[in-house]
Length: 326
Image (cartoon, rainbow, N blue to C red; front, side, top):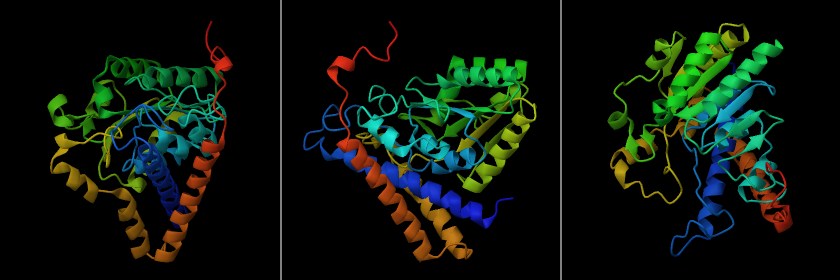
């Protein structure tokens, strides 16, 4: 059962992630206009933000410890923050600065933090076989750690997804597969690309416990993930969870989203952050003042991280051949 202290922490983490994504969005767009130039500004290149998907990261990571591993997708910030990746180092990496996680050489889609056992990739479904390998290492070492692979519903159509599930089930590995179903694989609606409404059925086909979690509810997600994580720690093998969440913003920043039509307005009505805030206020767990204080604290931390990144040095050109394979 989730107690009130946990509920407040869930809200705190969700507010922190939203503040981070909103600040990145504002800073990303600040120097790319009046004529849109994706290569311009302090954060050049693509930017994929996860506003609306905070409950998945928070509900999942509340069940994990530092030495558990996560492989994330190209939309990774919510997972990284919830897992405990240093906010200053991550922000510096996104800004391409030498103080970043990979000295500014990876950027926002390639965050790598061995201390927190967190990684992600811009290649769709790439993290799933990696998580299986991490889980195999944990099993061979005899620890009770678990690995988690998080990907979008579009990745469930990749061969790597099926290969990873098959091997994990055959070897009964301590790995949890999380599918974030936000209804859109870039601009392709789920219903036009996948013939089944419930993607968790694919896990059942590989003989592993599987569940679809509706509602984008952080507490329901926490409980579903707890069952899966506890089972994996106890030697029960893998689980597949498909979590129905929502992508409030574009696939990437600059995405006009004309393909979403009226559904875009419906998505805004499903925003989990104000809904959870109001739920806690109505239950007497938070007041409007305490909720505002939590959000203000999150914004201050995020602003400090962005200032840290902006004031950090860029990598030296002479360092181009460092940290690479020869």
